[in-house]
Length: 365
Ligand code: GLY
Image (tube, rainbow, N blue to C red):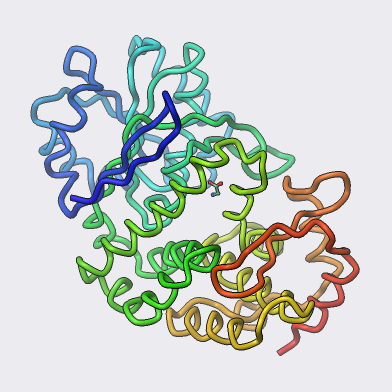
């Protein structure tokens, strides 16, 4: 088993990564179950696919599932209110832990419920998608979507333990896995050039489900995230903002598709990273050869690398409007994550929106 520590003082915790962890989760979870009972928040699809494995692996515990419908719509006030009412009806206490079993939606929803019920109870995460395993389950960001935008209501609430069982990915749609893979590439591009070289060599094995390659990639990504979160838990110093590489362009693309399944989040991040690299090349910051390598690798991983490919018009005005509505806007200016090359991302607050608009207008290929 690989154990990645997340060093946050009294909020420190471990991320355990191993094939089959779900089938033997009982021992790791038992210390967090009051009187042997553990409340699990999941969605109906994940529970149907993985609930049986978890129940078997937790024969020593009494599991109390709270199930919500699958999909982004569950990150809502109404589902949060349903979950909170159920937790209170089940007699949740502040010293209890709830377990989030699922993808990013469940982790964010259950995490936020745990952050506010009884003014906060404990949280455990068993992420079941690649995106949740390498990103959302680690670092303590929780929240829901509201009318004004995605993730605009939430809290930082760190889990006490994260258990990652890569075998959960075997029942997933490969497109979901490829989208999650984009976030692994992101960590390499932020500050880990050797990881990028390794992904160029082993990425197909990771995507193909090769156990050794997949677990190595997940562990490297989690370690990258843990390092950054430990240095800037609440995204105040600019360090954690680096995790938004590809996300400002990506957010605009997702917004343009109405956040629909036409473009998964990870796919938008992949294309967003290509745009961030190309933009950085145009500004004379980044070698063109690095941008070419990034594009080639994402393309080989069957991820989108052009607007045309995902049927989005190169309309700079519309796309920059979406960016201005995003939460990362500060004082009318957006902090862009640009790059000086592979592994050399940085926060740039000097970007003029007119420049971005003109760049996006030229993406007609
Ligand atoms: N997903 C970005 C972060 O956790 O900060």
